[in-house]
Amino acid sequence: MAYAGSQQLEKRLTRIEARRRALKRGAVYSVNQDGLIIARPRRRGVRRPLYLVFFALAGVIAFKAALYASLGAASYAMRVEELAQGTAIERVAAWVMHADQITVWLALQGKMLLS
Image 1 (cartoon, rainbow, N blue to C red):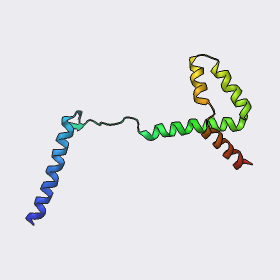
Image 2 (cartoon, helix red, strand yellow):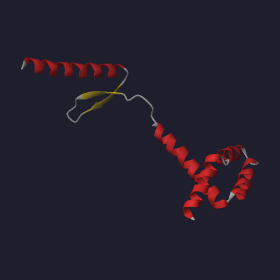
Image 3 (tube, rainbow, N blue to C red):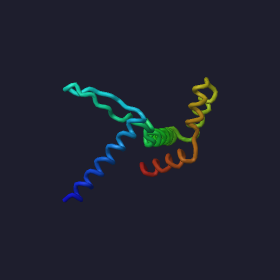
Image 4 (cartoon, rainbow, N blue to C red):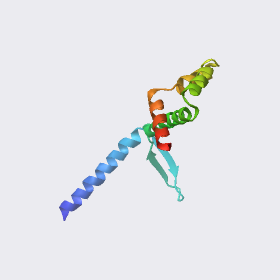
């Protein structure tokens, strides 16, 4: 019986020590309804998860492929060239919208699925 109690005590002490280490790196304080001030560890790490960047890139590539498939290769290239002759923002957009191999392959796959 005493052995089980000592295991619970060790687990509790480990949790308490981990919380103290986390609070040393920074804390956020809040007040409960009864007036008790509670310190919570400040969250660290990447604010924007990496999967959001991945989905944004996938969305841009899918958008490019859809435009490429709907406009055709010649018209798409002409419009990208028009963008490349514009302002700095338009030149960046032309660089992003340049038809790469992935875009062309996805456009061809999309046309095959639709036909």
